[in-house]
Length: 86
Image (cartoon, rainbow, N blue to C red):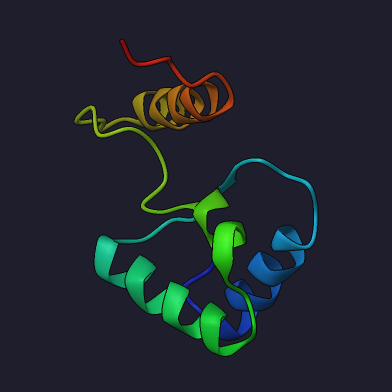
């Protein structure tokens, strides 16, 4: 990911065209909201957009690169193996 929607949005649209269950995107919540609006305008929608996780990673207060990587991997595992409620 870059800081340029002209580069990021086509990459995300391409990822949405795959069967990837998890697509992570860097940036703030506001950046992610704006990103989703642009992707909807570009024709993406429905359940597909739910596969884009942004800001990427679990909220564990990660600071170091290793902690950030762990938070991302944790979110991928949690998405792949959701816990049953009850």
